[in-house]
Image (cartoon, rainbow, N blue to C red; front, side, top):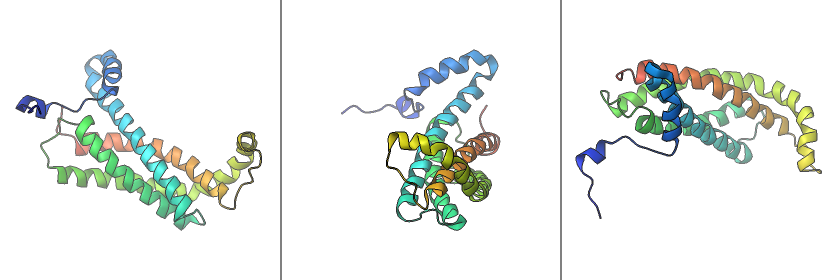
Length: 192
């Protein structure tokens, strides 16, 4: 087994996305580092969205079907917490590896506070919009769904589930921009 030397243990985390991200970021000249961070943040956010939507799907399919706004808010909160854990971990390791003047605990508290502000706005939006969006989208998407599943008949909660995912998609995009800028200039403001 090979031992790591001190230089290897401080090397930032690398993954296959780095080549593409660095190539795109270099095109922005003196703003390339910020573009690199934003693109990494977006990749982390995409992974977080997969965690978020996957958790939401599992929660609504098992323990909290979307019967009312309270069950939708509870399910989105559970999914959001899973995504926060994923996002904080990957942002600390990959997006902002050079931000270490604050302890992990302090960064987690700041990251969580910013995420909670985003969660509040997102949850209010989803709780308000899920039913109108589901009612609007189901008749439009039903022919497409039935082209793949001809015998499909929407369940009593199908519009709520569809509306939840549609409203959540919009909320995720809006909150991503809030989270990036708030975290960049507050949680990770110790980097150049």
